[in-house]
Length: 198
Ligand code: FES
Image 1 (cartoon, rainbow, N blue to C red):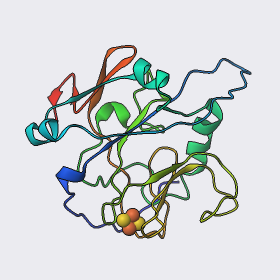
Image 2: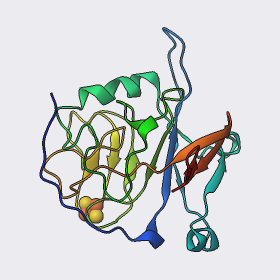
Image 3: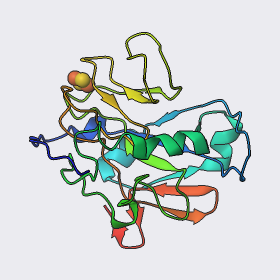
Image 4: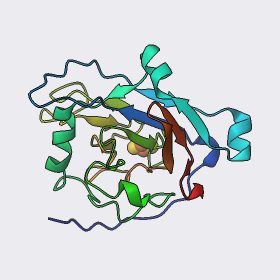
């Protein structure tokens, strides 16, 4: 059931924009995924930020450095279960970037690569950097029924595995999803897509 929420709009701090890149490998039917979650907080160079340039990320290289977050099929399955718990399940009220059309789906990802999530690592409350808390279950600072997602240590806002903010948290909006595209199966370009640059 769709939720409605009163949300406010706040100008982000462009200089603090960082890209949070989360990827998943495709698991076959019945495949047990034992991947250790990694997360990469990718910060473009100051020059790239100043120029507003797209950022190119070689996913394969990131895997070798163990900095890619991997959402397993089990983790993806958790996302629809959070629809009733998040403030804006359909991402109707974006923070600073319109949700790209190709991400208007339950995983907020490209349909051809549903495991790959790209969101800005800027909390929509006051701009702190959310931390990856991808493992479900009890852990410090989180509820016992934690489904996995992201946690902002500043004031306790929590986001699900698609970067959607949970209800009744200080943050009013979901994490932004920037434009992105693949120039190669393992090369992700952030800040640009088939329609051009953001
Ligand atoms: S800045 Fe994230 S909860 Fe306040």
